[in-house]
Length: 342
Image (cartoon, rainbow, N blue to C red; front, side, top):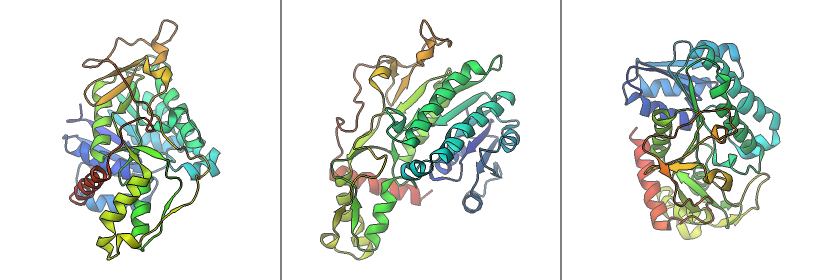
Protein backbone atom coordinates (compact mmCIF):
# COMPACT_ATOMS: atom_id res chain seq x y z
CA UNK A 1 0.00 0.00 0.00
CA UNK A 2 2.91 2.40 0.62
CA UNK A 3 5.48 1.38 -1.98
CA UNK A 4 5.79 3.92 -4.81
CA UNK A 5 3.01 6.06 -3.33
CA UNK A 6 2.96 9.73 -2.38
CA UNK A 7 2.14 10.26 1.30
CA UNK A 8 1.38 13.34 3.41
CA UNK A 9 1.76 13.31 7.19
CA UNK A 10 0.26 16.33 8.95
CA UNK A 11 1.88 17.15 12.27
CA UNK A 12 4.73 15.07 10.89
CA UNK A 13 7.42 16.75 13.02
CA UNK A 14 5.62 15.91 16.28
CA UNK A 15 6.46 12.92 18.46
CA UNK A 16 3.78 10.71 16.87
CA UNK A 17 4.13 12.07 13.34
CA UNK A 18 7.89 11.62 13.16
CA UNK A 19 7.75 7.94 14.12
CA UNK A 20 5.06 7.36 11.48
CA UNK A 21 7.26 9.13 8.92
CA UNK A 22 10.16 6.84 9.77
CA UNK A 23 8.00 3.72 9.43
CA UNK A 24 6.61 4.94 6.10
CA UNK A 25 10.12 5.50 4.74
CA UNK A 26 10.91 1.86 5.47
CA UNK A 27 8.15 0.86 3.02
CA UNK A 28 9.58 2.48 -0.10
CA UNK A 29 7.24 5.40 -0.75
CA UNK A 30 7.87 7.70 -3.68
CA UNK A 31 7.50 10.89 -1.60
CA UNK A 32 6.66 11.67 2.03
CA UNK A 33 5.51 15.25 2.61
CA UNK A 34 5.82 16.35 6.22
CA UNK A 35 3.55 19.26 7.16
CA UNK A 36 4.01 20.98 10.51
CA UNK A 37 3.53 24.46 11.96
CA UNK A 38 6.73 24.23 14.01
CA UNK A 39 9.71 25.49 12.01
CA UNK A 40 12.29 24.32 14.62
CA UNK A 41 10.75 20.83 14.71
CA UNK A 42 10.77 20.62 10.91
CA UNK A 43 14.39 21.75 10.76
CA UNK A 44 15.42 19.24 13.41
CA UNK A 45 13.66 16.37 11.65
CA UNK A 46 15.17 17.37 8.31
CA UNK A 47 18.62 17.15 9.87
CA UNK A 48 17.86 13.74 11.35
CA UNK A 49 16.39 12.12 8.24
CA UNK A 50 18.50 13.48 5.38
CA UNK A 51 16.29 11.56 2.92
CA UNK A 52 15.67 12.85 -0.60
CA UNK A 53 12.16 11.36 -0.58
CA UNK A 54 11.08 13.78 2.16
CA UNK A 55 9.54 17.20 1.61
CA UNK A 56 9.33 19.52 4.62
CA UNK A 57 6.29 21.80 4.47
CA UNK A 58 5.65 24.62 6.91
CA UNK A 59 1.95 25.22 7.41
CA UNK A 60 -1.08 25.06 9.67
CA UNK A 61 -4.11 22.84 9.08
CA UNK A 62 -6.33 25.84 9.82
CA UNK A 63 -5.08 27.28 6.51
CA UNK A 64 -7.17 25.55 3.84
CA UNK A 65 -5.24 27.03 0.92
CA UNK A 66 -1.96 25.68 2.32
CA UNK A 67 -3.52 22.27 2.74
CA UNK A 68 -4.76 22.28 -0.84
CA UNK A 69 -1.16 22.69 -2.03
CA UNK A 70 0.09 20.07 0.41
CA UNK A 71 -2.30 17.33 -0.81
CA UNK A 72 -1.83 17.98 -4.54
CA UNK A 73 -0.71 14.69 -6.09
CA UNK A 74 -0.93 12.80 -2.79
CA UNK A 75 -2.28 9.22 -2.57
CA UNK A 76 -2.39 8.68 1.21
CA UNK A 77 -2.83 11.17 4.09
CA UNK A 78 -2.03 10.40 7.73
CA UNK A 79 -3.45 13.18 9.90
CA UNK A 80 -1.69 13.56 13.26
CA UNK A 81 -1.76 17.37 13.65
CA UNK A 82 -3.90 18.34 16.64
CA UNK A 83 -4.11 20.02 20.01
CA UNK A 84 -3.55 17.00 22.26
CA UNK A 85 -2.98 18.34 25.76
CA UNK A 86 -6.11 18.01 27.89
CA UNK A 87 -5.45 20.97 30.17
CA UNK A 88 -4.45 23.36 27.38
CA UNK A 89 -7.51 22.40 25.34
CA UNK A 90 -9.71 22.83 28.40
CA UNK A 91 -8.43 26.37 28.94
CA UNK A 92 -8.61 27.22 25.22
CA UNK A 93 -11.64 25.25 24.00
CA UNK A 94 -12.37 27.11 20.81
CA UNK A 95 -8.73 26.97 19.78
CA UNK A 96 -9.03 23.19 20.12
CA UNK A 97 -12.18 23.31 17.97
CA UNK A 98 -10.43 25.38 15.30
CA UNK A 99 -7.54 22.92 15.08
CA UNK A 100 -9.12 19.55 15.85
CA UNK A 101 -12.47 20.06 14.13
CA UNK A 102 -12.28 22.87 11.56
CA UNK A 103 -8.71 21.97 10.62
CA UNK A 104 -9.75 18.35 10.11
CA UNK A 105 -12.71 19.35 7.94
CA UNK A 106 -10.35 21.52 5.89
CA UNK A 107 -8.19 18.46 5.31
CA UNK A 108 -11.19 16.32 4.38
CA UNK A 109 -12.39 18.88 1.85
CA UNK A 110 -9.05 19.34 0.10
CA UNK A 111 -8.34 15.59 0.13
CA UNK A 112 -11.63 14.89 -1.64
CA UNK A 113 -10.97 17.62 -4.20
CA UNK A 114 -7.44 16.30 -4.84
CA UNK A 115 -8.64 12.70 -5.37
CA UNK A 116 -6.64 11.35 -2.43
CA UNK A 117 -7.22 7.60 -2.09
CA UNK A 118 -6.96 7.07 1.69
CA UNK A 119 -7.10 9.33 4.75
CA UNK A 120 -6.33 8.06 8.26
CA UNK A 121 -7.23 10.36 11.18
CA UNK A 122 -5.44 9.80 14.49
CA UNK A 123 -8.04 10.10 17.24
CA UNK A 124 -7.81 9.29 20.96
CA UNK A 125 -9.31 6.90 23.46
CA UNK A 126 -10.63 10.08 25.09
CA UNK A 127 -13.20 10.15 22.27
CA UNK A 128 -14.99 7.27 24.02
CA UNK A 129 -17.29 8.88 26.61
CA UNK A 130 -15.41 12.22 26.40
CA UNK A 131 -15.03 14.05 29.70
CA UNK A 132 -13.03 16.99 28.36
CA UNK A 133 -12.77 19.35 25.40
CA UNK A 134 -9.96 17.45 23.73
CA UNK A 135 -11.92 14.19 23.84
CA UNK A 136 -15.05 15.91 22.56
CA UNK A 137 -13.20 17.37 19.57
CA UNK A 138 -11.73 13.97 18.77
CA UNK A 139 -15.17 12.35 18.92
CA UNK A 140 -16.56 14.96 16.55
CA UNK A 141 -13.51 14.39 14.35
CA UNK A 142 -14.34 10.68 14.11
CA UNK A 143 -17.89 11.59 13.11
CA UNK A 144 -16.63 13.94 10.39
CA UNK A 145 -14.28 11.28 9.02
CA UNK A 146 -16.95 8.58 8.90
CA UNK A 147 -19.49 10.91 7.28
CA UNK A 148 -16.95 12.07 4.70
CA UNK A 149 -17.10 8.66 3.05
CA UNK A 150 -20.56 9.66 1.82
CA UNK A 151 -19.92 13.41 1.73
CA UNK A 152 -17.20 12.73 -0.85
CA UNK A 153 -19.85 12.13 -3.50
CA UNK A 154 -18.46 10.40 -6.56
CA UNK A 155 -14.82 10.61 -5.46
CA UNK A 156 -13.21 7.25 -4.72
CA UNK A 157 -11.74 7.99 -1.30
CA UNK A 158 -11.64 5.91 1.89
CA UNK A 159 -11.44 7.67 5.25
CA UNK A 160 -10.98 5.97 8.62
CA UNK A 161 -10.00 6.82 12.18
CA UNK A 162 -7.52 5.22 14.57
CA UNK A 163 -8.07 5.59 18.29
CA UNK A 164 -5.24 5.08 20.78
CA UNK A 165 -4.22 5.90 24.31
CA UNK A 166 -0.99 7.26 25.73
CA UNK A 167 2.15 6.57 23.73
CA UNK A 168 5.29 5.73 25.66
CA UNK A 169 7.57 8.80 25.75
CA UNK A 170 5.43 10.93 23.42
CA UNK A 171 5.45 14.67 24.08
CA UNK A 172 1.93 14.69 25.59
CA UNK A 173 2.36 11.63 27.82
CA UNK A 174 3.27 11.70 31.50
CA UNK A 175 6.55 9.83 30.99
CA UNK A 176 8.74 12.79 29.90
CA UNK A 177 7.34 14.80 32.82
CA UNK A 178 8.24 12.08 35.32
CA UNK A 179 11.70 11.70 33.79
CA UNK A 180 12.46 15.42 34.08
CA UNK A 181 11.31 15.41 37.71
CA UNK A 182 13.51 12.42 38.50
CA UNK A 183 16.49 14.08 36.79
CA UNK A 184 16.22 17.04 39.18
CA UNK A 185 15.87 14.80 42.23
CA UNK A 186 12.09 14.95 42.54
CA UNK A 187 9.52 15.08 43.78
CA UNK A 188 7.52 13.15 41.20
CA UNK A 189 4.02 14.63 41.05
CA UNK A 190 1.13 12.19 40.82
CA UNK A 191 -2.37 13.59 40.38
CA UNK A 192 -4.04 10.53 41.94
CA UNK A 193 -2.73 7.01 42.69
CA UNK A 194 -6.03 5.45 41.51
CA UNK A 195 -5.48 6.50 37.91
CA UNK A 196 -4.90 3.93 35.18
CA UNK A 197 -4.07 4.43 31.51
CA UNK A 198 -3.68 2.44 28.32
CA UNK A 199 -0.22 2.68 26.76
CA UNK A 200 1.20 1.85 23.35
CA UNK A 201 4.72 1.76 22.01
CA UNK A 202 5.72 3.68 18.89
CA UNK A 203 5.74 0.37 17.01
CA UNK A 204 2.14 -0.23 18.11
CA UNK A 205 1.10 3.18 16.77
CA UNK A 206 2.81 2.55 13.43
CA UNK A 207 1.19 -0.88 13.18
CA UNK A 208 -2.20 0.67 13.95
CA UNK A 209 -1.91 3.40 11.31
CA UNK A 210 -0.53 1.07 8.65
CA UNK A 211 -3.21 -1.50 9.52
CA UNK A 212 -5.92 1.11 9.00
CA UNK A 213 -4.42 2.07 5.63
CA UNK A 214 -4.34 -1.57 4.56
CA UNK A 215 -7.72 -2.71 5.87
CA UNK A 216 -10.15 0.20 5.66
CA UNK A 217 -13.09 0.14 3.29
CA UNK A 218 -14.29 3.44 4.75
CA UNK A 219 -15.70 4.79 8.00
CA UNK A 220 -14.22 2.42 10.59
CA UNK A 221 -12.50 3.24 13.86
CA UNK A 222 -9.43 1.05 14.37
CA UNK A 223 -8.05 0.43 17.87
CA UNK A 224 -4.86 -1.39 18.83
CA UNK A 225 -5.12 -3.94 21.63
CA UNK A 226 -3.32 -2.12 24.44
CA UNK A 227 -1.70 -2.78 27.77
CA UNK A 228 -2.90 -0.92 30.87
CA UNK A 229 -0.71 0.61 33.57
CA UNK A 230 -1.35 2.05 37.01
CA UNK A 231 0.17 5.52 36.98
CA UNK A 232 1.49 5.00 40.52
CA UNK A 233 3.32 1.85 39.35
CA UNK A 234 4.69 3.77 36.37
CA UNK A 235 6.07 6.48 38.65
CA UNK A 236 7.73 3.98 40.97
CA UNK A 237 9.20 1.95 38.09
CA UNK A 238 10.63 5.11 36.53
CA UNK A 239 12.14 6.23 39.82
CA UNK A 240 13.82 2.83 40.25
CA UNK A 241 15.05 2.82 36.66
CA UNK A 242 16.12 6.42 36.06
CA UNK A 243 17.21 7.78 39.44
CA UNK A 244 20.61 6.00 39.38
CA UNK A 245 21.17 7.34 35.83
CA UNK A 246 21.06 10.86 37.26
CA UNK A 247 23.12 9.93 40.37
CA UNK A 248 20.10 9.97 42.69
CA UNK A 249 19.07 7.42 45.31
CA UNK A 250 15.60 6.11 44.37
CA UNK A 251 14.71 5.99 48.07
CA UNK A 252 15.25 9.75 48.34
CA UNK A 253 12.82 10.71 45.56
CA UNK A 254 9.34 11.35 46.91
CA UNK A 255 6.03 10.87 45.10
CA UNK A 256 3.67 13.76 45.85
CA UNK A 257 -0.05 13.67 45.16
CA UNK A 258 -1.29 16.92 43.60
CA UNK A 259 -4.97 16.20 42.87
CA UNK A 260 -6.79 15.58 39.64
CA UNK A 261 -6.59 18.32 37.00
CA UNK A 262 -9.59 19.84 35.25
CA UNK A 263 -10.87 17.47 32.57
CA UNK A 264 -8.71 14.57 33.76
CA UNK A 265 -10.30 11.14 34.17
CA UNK A 266 -9.40 8.36 36.60
CA UNK A 267 -9.55 5.67 33.91
CA UNK A 268 -9.78 5.52 30.13
CA UNK A 269 -11.98 3.53 27.78
CA UNK A 270 -11.05 2.40 24.29
CA UNK A 271 -14.60 1.56 23.19
CA UNK A 272 -18.12 2.38 24.31
CA UNK A 273 -20.61 -0.34 25.19
CA UNK A 274 -22.65 0.71 22.15
CA UNK A 275 -19.65 0.20 19.87
CA UNK A 276 -18.86 -3.33 21.06
CA UNK A 277 -21.78 -4.86 19.14
CA UNK A 278 -20.27 -3.47 15.91
CA UNK A 279 -16.66 -4.41 16.67
CA UNK A 280 -14.59 -7.00 14.85
CA UNK A 281 -11.01 -8.04 15.53
CA UNK A 282 -7.89 -9.68 14.22
CA UNK A 283 -4.82 -10.68 16.22
CA UNK A 284 -3.72 -7.13 17.13
CA UNK A 285 -6.53 -4.74 16.13
CA UNK A 286 -10.16 -3.99 16.86
CA UNK A 287 -12.24 -2.31 14.16
CA UNK A 288 -15.55 -0.61 14.88
CA UNK A 289 -17.83 -0.89 11.85
CA UNK A 290 -19.65 2.43 11.28
CA UNK A 291 -23.09 2.60 12.81
CA UNK A 292 -24.13 4.57 9.72
CA UNK A 293 -23.82 1.36 7.68
CA UNK A 294 -26.81 -0.30 9.37
CA UNK A 295 -30.30 -0.75 7.96
CA UNK A 296 -31.10 2.92 8.46
CA UNK A 297 -27.63 4.19 7.64
CA UNK A 298 -26.15 5.93 4.63
CA UNK A 299 -22.96 3.89 4.19
CA UNK A 300 -22.44 0.50 2.61
CA UNK A 301 -20.08 -1.79 4.52
CA UNK A 302 -19.63 -5.49 3.84
CA UNK A 303 -17.12 -6.22 6.58
CA UNK A 304 -13.32 -6.44 6.70
CA UNK A 305 -11.20 -9.29 5.36
CA UNK A 306 -9.34 -11.10 8.11
CA UNK A 307 -11.52 -9.74 10.94
CA UNK A 308 -14.04 -11.67 13.04
CA UNK A 309 -16.73 -10.52 15.53
CA UNK A 310 -15.26 -9.96 18.98
CA UNK A 311 -15.84 -12.54 21.68
CA UNK A 312 -14.81 -10.31 24.57
CA UNK A 313 -13.50 -6.76 24.95
CA UNK A 314 -12.07 -5.14 28.07
CA UNK A 315 -13.12 -1.56 27.38
CA UNK A 316 -11.71 0.23 30.42
CA UNK A 317 -8.16 0.58 31.74
CA UNK A 318 -9.68 0.08 35.20
CA UNK A 319 -10.75 -3.49 34.33
CA UNK A 320 -7.82 -4.41 32.09
CA UNK A 321 -4.94 -6.55 33.32
CA UNK A 322 -2.18 -4.19 34.48
CA UNK A 323 1.50 -4.52 33.73
CA UNK A 324 3.65 -5.26 36.76
CA UNK A 325 6.40 -2.83 37.74
CA UNK A 326 8.95 -5.27 36.31
CA UNK A 327 7.05 -5.39 33.02
CA UNK A 328 6.81 -1.58 32.99
CA UNK A 329 10.56 -1.32 33.53
CA UNK A 330 11.23 -3.69 30.64
CA UNK A 331 8.80 -1.79 28.40
CA UNK A 332 10.51 1.52 29.18
CA UNK A 333 14.00 0.11 28.70
CA UNK A 334 13.11 -1.42 25.34
CA UNK A 335 11.32 1.69 24.10
CA UNK A 336 13.96 4.20 25.15
CA UNK A 337 16.72 2.05 23.59
CA UNK A 338 14.69 1.72 20.40
CA UNK A 339 14.10 5.45 20.08
CA UNK A 340 17.77 6.20 20.75
CA UNK A 341 18.86 4.03 17.82
CA UNK A 342 16.45 5.54 15.28
